[in-house]
Image (cartoon, rainbow, N blue to C red; front, side):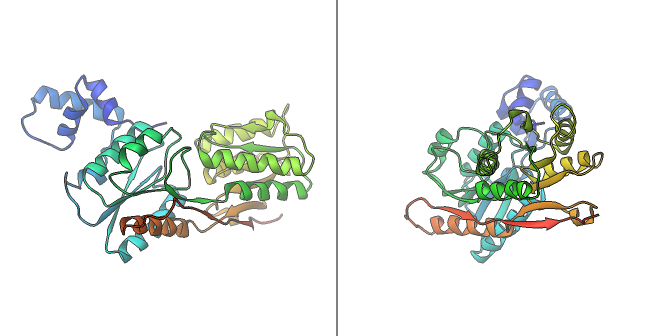
Length: 328
């Protein structure tokens, strides 16, 4: 479920987004009935203001860079934050973090506000949306580096994982273990990483001479609960998958929940999964150094802040297949 934006609050309260901003920032000279309407809409929608943008005054240039991510609660994103912060400190900059909840309107508003407040640079994990116009609008005003995902048609530096190669390796591992009906559980197919991982899965099947059955592919799984429901359906008749590849850590957790009610099920996933070694079943995982992902992205950003005019760079970090869990 996407997070409500300031525009949603404005629509619900029957006011302009500018009025919502004035209420959120506790400005004076707002009619009590207007303030009450906005506060009621905020409470009903569960809106949370972006503290990152609020704490930076308009026109401020204070050795600050911003990292805009999807969800700071996910261990993957928190590791990227640690890596980026290490480099920011080395350059005597403060790193501030904002989240989008995968909502493009919220992402666009946050990025525009950060640029208006004159941060020195932006590290961005983009949502699944066309970013060409937004990048054209902002790129001339502040250096920008994309992390983990590359928006099509956007000429900007980026640091990504080898999503294709990692997924291909994971699916090939399941095939070598004797599984033949291998399901694929993914999230948003419009996201760069999801498309690359599905392509890697398909390539592994093709390399082994196995057909790619559309019934074995489930997309749009955004939560653990979504993934558990989808996996349960794939592991039973009429699909009867005998193994599952999960394209991110949250989906893998959902698959593990569903697999508990089944017998021998092969499981592979992209991203490490906390506490999976405690499980009484083997799980193959594609892992990588997420902290280094943050470091490399921040290093590229500070190169641009320092005046680098080199050609657009795209760094691809390697992945590793590891075995987790316990064999019964």
